[in-house]
Image (cartoon, rainbow, N blue to C red; front, side):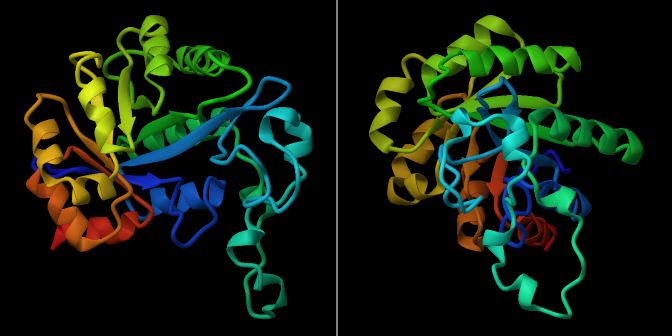
Length: 266
């Protein structure tokens, strides 16, 4: 990756084509050359960190229930991929799928996938992990996440990982538990920056949404001029990538990492 262009981060894997947060989506993202993988993390009832965005299972597993109320063994029985292509079973020409690629993905498995890929390929790949709030488990999510990262030696300044959240309190918690770990303060609404700009740490990365930057051009320039590195989500179009380049954004989080890499290579 050129130091003059942003890092391309696969949002929930190669999620435009493949069901989000599945191992299949992340393997595809690695194969096309994504330089980092983004994931959301939640805690199961029996204390396992899993890569799932929604609090409920209705959208991605097409069943009732919440992630926090179910044990990992129960989640492992669910299909997290069919919703993306519901007609696949009726297609006689569709290739047979490895069901293991479509099941719930644990944070541990994703970490090991990134670690093993980097070792085999000699190419550094990073992880951008978002902790979801509010949650019934509160700060236990960050505590268990930092413990897991510590197990792999991934809590130093040079570790291939950063922790993101819309919750300022959650990131403060991460900073206390692992002072050298990079953190990203996500921002969804423009009005939040006036408050957050006074309380974020000097080394914190700022993560605004692309829609917010589009709607408030001056705000993007203010953040860019604040001295904070900027990582932007979710960047899928050429015009949005151009806006990020103009603002000196250091990472673009995209459902279409292949498209971003193609545009950056032109």
